[in-house]
Image 1: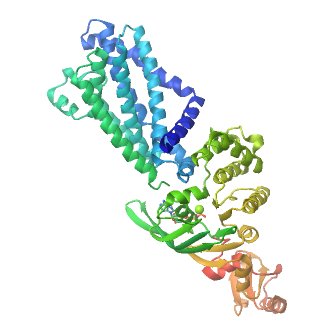
Image 2 (image 1 turned 120 degrees about the vertical axis):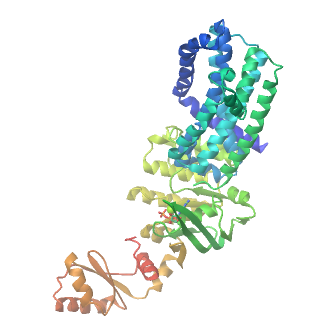
Length: 251
Length: 314
Ligand SMILES: Nc1ncnc2c1ncn2[C@@H]1O[C@H](COP(=O)(O)OP(=O)(O)OP(=O)(O)O)[C@@H](O)[C@H]1O
Ligand SMILES: [Mg+2]
């Protein structure tokens, strides 16, 4: 099918360029590892848990969701560089599917995020984290949906504003409250009621709760399917919107 | 091969708090025949790129219609895309890719299979004398090499029509001459070439027919020779010291005259008759004489008579 073929063409090209710059893989792993080593030890007393394993069970899912959100939201910068180089315009005069122009790129972001997540999970295993494989795979699905959504949003906004100067503050403004109100770094269990009330309106808060349930081994928790469903719906909406931006005129 | 009627496009641009409407293209009619090298000549901001981007399906016209290689621009932009190639003014290559990778990808985006794409890439690399650098990253190329890659990308799928937006801007004279040969070769291969330029000599030497655009409108169309013939007579160019220009203009005010920084140009019936009279008039006014040249009207003179401005100055 033409769409699948187009997606794979764009995706392969993007992967090829990504792997040509292995420095990003290093940076992408180095930071989370620092969190694992330097931040997580503070958690055991803060979370009032008995073992390292329990602390990592709460912290690692949060960290992964955080990476998915931020990793996605800042992909737009690369697209602006492509716009400036004329690569996007060159693609847009060909009959290539506009949806493929978006999905080829977003899927690269998903793949690189999952690679990052696998490395971090493996490291956390060294710190006594234990997670059941099917649950882990579902958690990765959640991460994939998050990163698909956030990268699509970032691409769409990048095409609309066309400049790094506008994209950076916009993405930061979005990311900060999302981060603070989702209980990503620390669960909101001890938060005052009003804060929890606001967090209920933050879709990422549902995603984090779902991912934590999966790491806990609580597959049946409603948080799991609710989080997955909310993320899937938002990802579809974001992709549809961003693909329209690719189809519209772009200078 | 290309026919447009009443194409229009305006942009709303924001300057501070004020919104300003720029009418970039205001009703363009064009007829380009198959196998032609058609030139679009005009100063910066004339609307050349905007017209090309409309024809290449990148932006939607506000009004008007166009048929390109038999496909209707509005009704069937997908078919237009398949039949045309477009080379943007600002380039189109990615620093970290090689020319071969870019060409293979581009061919595949147009639907070629992998082996076909590789063969096409090898062929155009050879045709544009790029084989030597084909596997080096684009950021290591010279300006001229990179421009050739841009054009190779625009024609890899052998379109019926190719739009080249200022393919020679920024190239040295030798690379420009080289590029002209490339453009002629494309035509010889059966393509219709639509090229924009603000070089007069380029429009004159390379193009079969041209349209001169200014301020969003076409002010003249025809073969370069016909356009020049429209301006009857000769042009006498008198080089003068800068401070003598005003006095010379005064002394020669009975002629059709244009003044420039270090020369004046007079449009006369017959140069051979006019020159002695001009010299006498200048002498009588005590204007120190510089060089005197007689030439046939150039495209710049055409532009001047149509718009009241010189293309060289704008
Ligand atoms: N996206 C846009 N938004 C606002 N104004 C625009 C846009 N694109 C073009 N314009 C304006 O439209 C006019 C025509 O621009 P265009 O790029 O078509 O000129 P051009 O003939 O190609 O000039 P040049 O020789 O400098 O390339 C200019 O005044 C330009 O500022
Ligand atoms: Mg232009």
